[in-house]
Image (cartoon, rainbow, N blue to C red):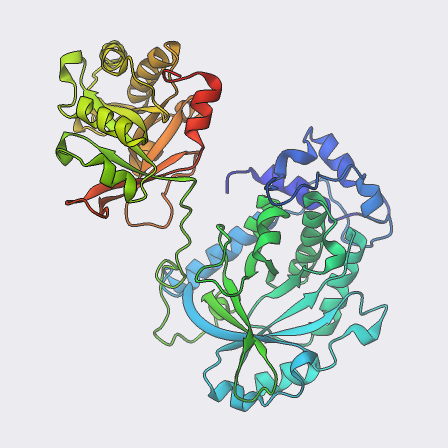
Length: 530
């Protein structure tokens, strides 16, 4: 998690307003010199709503009655870290943390359920609706079948969690819903989280800021009362209307039907993949869920009994959700030999990264650079270039930059020029030495009107390059056999395999995804020869 604890504690303070000294979220943000926009992860193409200009006083009533604000705000990370330490002490390792389980979620809509038949059919768990809205004020808003469902499910040994359907449009409403939910579920032990279900049409007009305040208010209150809190909604809302820092704090249950993988790129523990399931013991259609996190173990590690299906990694359990970016590419050099660029273009490849050369002499041009550039140009394929480094010092890197400039002049590159730092010659250098070499090369090309970046494998970038480099230049990261490269900083190109195949062409290829519309950037800003 990239944001510091203090910053997140400030966000959490939005939900903990004292009756004796009411403090608005606006005041809390202002007091810490933090813009309310800092957490905004709204995707403009999917949600045009701006962060609300309403003061938090309009969202939170002075008489919420939540836990009093202390001088040091309540910090969930201390609790989370303590819990993780507890889990490790009781498990010795992470071998029980993940497990594939199949479940259902039910409400009054399913009527009377034969829970023994459900259990016998192979269902592992059930998430049961406890109620909706402010049930303390309106008792009829407790789900009419909740008591029956949870007690009968537990009688047959079914693991259960609950969800509370929200109609809240302000933090007061979300707090009231959390208290109502607690009062309904407090006499029951749960093996799965308590989920805040936010999906009602009445909430669609809320901004990212307002939506996040609702979630934070409900979930933090439920958590403070000793329950494991989670968030449920459909993929689009989770992607466009919730701050990343809120998503990172609570377990996610994502709904997306009719797809192989939910269109939600962040971490999630459960996926509601169908609303039309048929299960023995239930007369009506029922929602079906895949779960990937071993909640019964995490919630009650002392009493959990392993069954041998647990694992220490979620990678093999959850369907892979790969972000393929905006363009698919290939990178080539002399090692690929002569390439049929017309077939390359016809195969669906959008762009090519072509090795221009290596070392500090312009005579060290890649043997196939000229042929590859001409072939790509003739086929109408966009391309960029990279220079393989052997530099031993910043001065040597400047010589490499000048050699690169000599080789690439006269061509238009719709994609960046990357400095490839992968050779064994860098193994004995310090991070500062390597970073100074990168800066020397990149700044020289930048002065000459080129969009530049650094290319290397993920572990090298993580451990051997100073963060300042990533703030100044683009990154092309190499990491194979994963759903996402293990690199936490920003990158705009990913080399995801060195063993790819391309229709109509023999041999294996390095394949890439690009995450920016580089051709538009180069043309609009008159870079790289444009």
